Image (cartoon, rainbow over all chains, first blue to last red; front, side):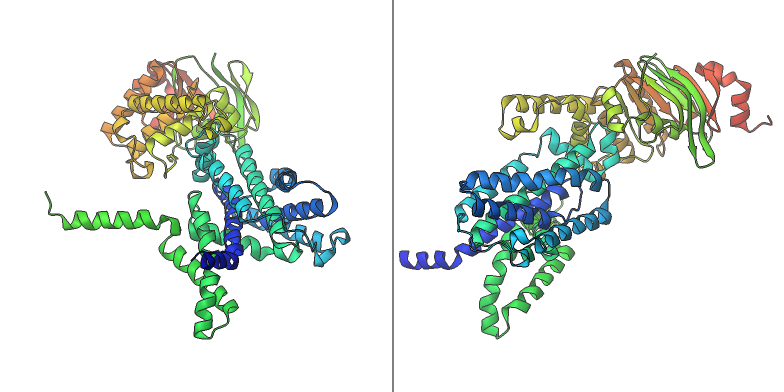
Length: 300
Length: 252
């Protein structure tokens, strides 16, 4: 029994670690969505965090804690001058501008000899494990969950629902939007730093546009109305390929294409039938059974 | 003088929606702003609350210029508003709407809330209690837990007034608070406005309902084509020949 558990852990510990990592990335997108901003710069911030971590580990003998602090702080500092002009844009214009930033960062690293160009940093020591990833995830979830009910939490929610009305209530919308943009950048950078020390390598191809789309899909599929949704979405969509691998080999289908197909299908089904995400399923079922019960009960 | 507009002007291209308007709102006064459609009433509310910048003139609150400041800074100086097309936060409850309005009255930083420190918890409690009291003042206490989107038009308007009062403003700007209401609702809004003034807030009331304005206002300014054409007590304004001409369409 113990031997079997040990073997399962060895097989799946990287999946478990990646669920936690993707959950942090999903929360980084949720941070800006919480005040109604669709920012897609987070793959770029993740790259900055990953390279910061990789370079510090390779070139200095620093312990992991200050290195991860730098992975969080450097992208956050980059986010301030980027956010000030970019957050004046709304909706798709903000999305496009931030996609542009992400591509710029990726191409910078592709062409930078100091970081080995397209090859990236290789042969990093593995310094992070699932435990550290989940400690970081727990802290991020707690900090974002505690926004609820706070002065800042009400301000963010008011910005999401009606920005002009929020301003006339004295909410400094620019400061709050920038604050959440920087928070998202910090979380993405932290995840980048963790990933670099989890996978032994940092390569520019890991931070392409499709990476930030993945993050957004985690948040949307799980539900971007609270901190639980993005984590559920990341867990579901990260574990799914493992399940599909088994199903695919049984059906004689290659797991790669099947994965993309099922991911797209899941996104479609969730948007059509569960607009608030998988995390809203329990409350929906409860509401439905309450409705059924009240219909079944005779009118008093 | 609490609020003073001097030669305020706002042009949209070649059209001067507000064309050198000057008037004053005194402490504790309910000041009516009336005029035909397109006279520039709502534009003045937008200029005073900072959603638009004047293209000329100056607006002073307690002697200090506020024209050109962003809306959140103007709110911080003590000017809040409601909207003609109601803009409550639809997915929040009535109570939560008022708590957002108390944003400027709250001080506890996020980190104190993060770690459940007593200062933050006390502030959350007093904010909640004040919000309930404000909903009580606009007679919405029983509906406090209802989602704003589910409230009737009149109820949403009263939530909006309570929300605007939550930061304890010196001046409350009301932009057509009775638009689309039935006579019973209008009477109840009139009572709410009087009570707001009794609590020491000045009110600048833009309104189409002339009877309401005559009933509740201490002083009235009449606008036509962006210019002030008359000013005075309701009785004075009602007798003014130019006002009668504008409202009854007589030849000038």
